[in-house]
Image (cartoon, rainbow, N blue to C red; front, side):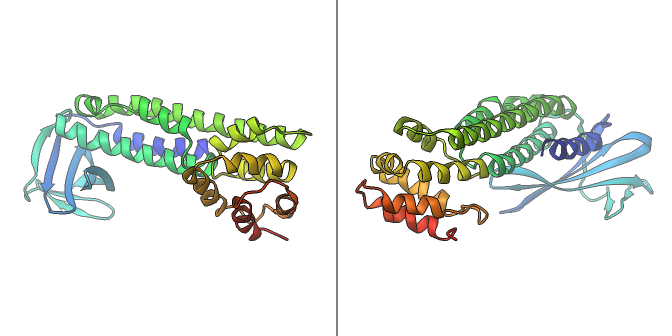
Length: 276
C-alpha cells in the first residue's frame, strides 16, 4: 500500500521538480467547468504542460504532458499541440495564483488518495484518521504563499504522516481481533468501545462476527441502548460484510440469546447473506 502511493507521489514530484523562471498561463472560464492551462519550463528546453479543471470550488489536475518547442509559438507533446498565440499570458513561477492552483490541486489529490486508502484498510469514517488529516493538512495560506517546489515538501511530509497513521490504526485493529479470538470472556464495556470505532474494514468485520459469536447477550445489550442513528450505522456497515467471512456461529448465538430487543432480528438479517 505505502510503496505504491509513495511511487505515485514521486512521479508527480519528478515531473514538477525542475521548474524555473516564468510560467505561461491560459485561463478558460466557463459556467460549470473552468480550465487553466500552464506551460512550465523544465530541463533541456522542454516544458511541462498542466491542465487544471475548476469544479465545485476545487482545482483538479486532469492532464499532464512534456512539450518541446517547435517554433516561436508552437509546442508539441506526445498527446497534444499547444499554440502560444492563443491567449497565454506570462506569470512568475511563484505568483500567488499559480501557487494556489498547483498547490491546492496537489493537496486535494493527496487527500483523496488518503481517503481511498483509509476506506480500504481502516474504514471510511475513522475519527482518529479524519481528525489528524484535517488538523495537519497544509493551510490555504501556504497554498497561496509557497512556491510549488516548497509546497511539495510539506505536502509530502503530511501525506507520509497520514499513511503512517493509517498503518498504525490498521495494526491496532488486527491486534484487537487477535485479542478477541483468544479471549474466553468479553464484557459489555469492551463491546461498547469496539462499536464506537467499528470500521468497514476486514479486521473489524472479522472481529464483530467473533464478538457476536462469543457474547451475543452482551452485544445485544449494547445495541439495545444505542440511539437509532448509531445502530443504523452499524447495520449499514454490516451490509458490506465480505463474502469470505462466514456468520453461522454468530447467527446461532443471536438466535439463542435471551436478551429481548427487536434489533436482534435486524442483525440476523444482515448476517444471513454470509450464512453457510
